[in-house]
Length: 178
Image 1: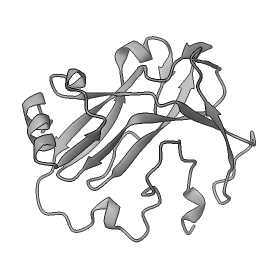
Image 2: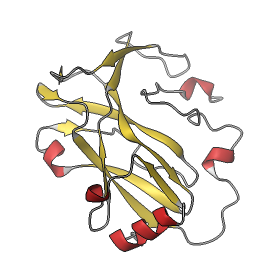
Image 3: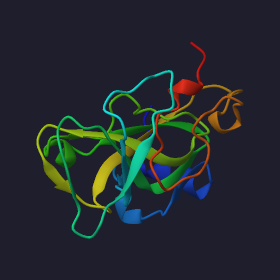
Image 4: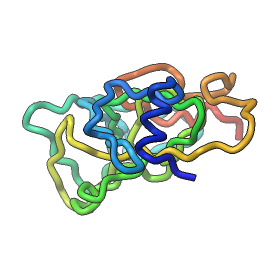
């Protein structure tokens, strides 16, 4: 079951969902709009290795924006820091962003109950497009959880993305055993 605007607002008031900064005008019928932060990153090497730490170059988006190019994976970040303690957050791109040929996540659209951080975005595009810090980039949709939870993300010993940051975080796949 997807939370409505009334249920999202109640969850925020009860501190079951935290959004910082919270802007009431970003609350939709059944979602909350998030914005592109001022930091992005790209991988230093064109060829990546899932078993190794792949380093990134940080980019700060200036007032003039930045043109993103096809064939490059950009890591972006939301302006908003979020915590979700009683529902499952899903991040989806806004239709206006999709109509510019921009995807904001390759596979990581679902958060876990207990996720507490800004969202790293996996941005790609089909043609060059200029984007700006602060632009609406996506929307969070919250699904109600049915049943008790024993394994909150922010309390897992092996959780890899728990350090609070305002910058995008590169893949930590190399920390897995395989």
